[in-house]
Length: 107
Length: 118
Image (cartoon, rainbow over all chains, first blue to last red):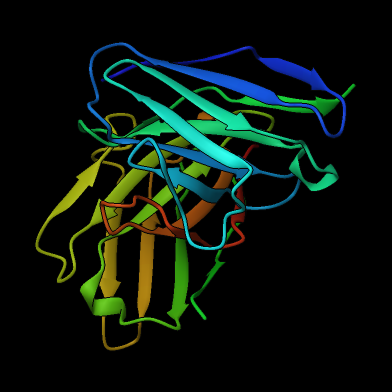
């Protein structure tokens, strides 16, 4: 299975600042990469798929980039509701595998 | 509005069985692949199993193959996960997720907690 590695494990950011999260795949997953946001006690929510396409209703401050093995999720100006855990998911190969998550916390 | 509502979780002893259900509404259930995804307490997400629209194809993560069975009833808009020979490491919140492949897991239920402990 493809191992997905996210960094950093925790990112401390002030509201209004930019956050950059990384996800690395153990082998190429083309652009078959998604990003999910999960808040405490809630189900994950799809943010990005196809590495860079925002899901329905997702604000423009969320953007994704990358292909192959290196991917980035950028939150351009952090809002209070963006503090959460973010997971990447590869769906290029079976089984679909998630990264271990990056927690974005208030600095 | 797409809604997925899981039920059936609870406390079960090691070696026991449990059947999870997921009631779907707000979309044409019979036209979508569906998945179960789990999350152990304080841990990350793990895909568990998925099922094709008419139930003819089913896939499992290695750790549950032979113990868990995914099924669906398109007439009832329901997804199921029969879990047998449960182990402590199966303790997790189990989520039902719509899985149209692209994008994957576009809608999720609120989850149901399964605790395997003596």
